Image (cartoon, rainbow, N blue to C red; front, side, top):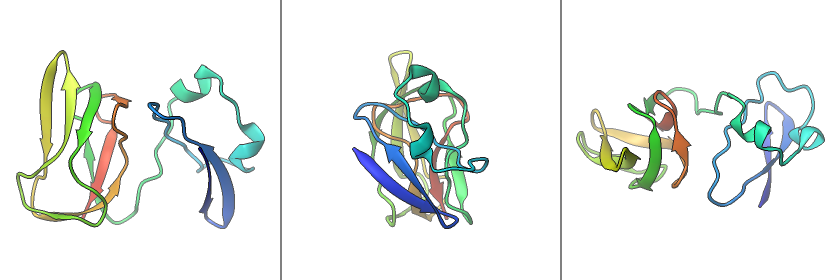
Length: 125
């Protein structure tokens, strides 16, 4: 699916492919992403910074793995200890829990996506 996202007054076209995760860094972009659109695997694996909502606390992956399930959605209020999502690593399911009572501001991770340790998963506030 192709989406148009407006950031800082500039429009960027982003293609989303089912079952794949792609983080887009537009901080250094001088032209809309459509001009540089490609389906090359090198683009998907290039290290990039995700677009993260300002004014929140980022919940990151404690270990590398695969996002098995996402249990919350943006706007949802949760209590401390609530399971936010599950990351599978080495055949073990690791529940990522809310560190305190909060509201989910943004879900960054996608179900089925491979994540590295320290990768942003959610923004809470």
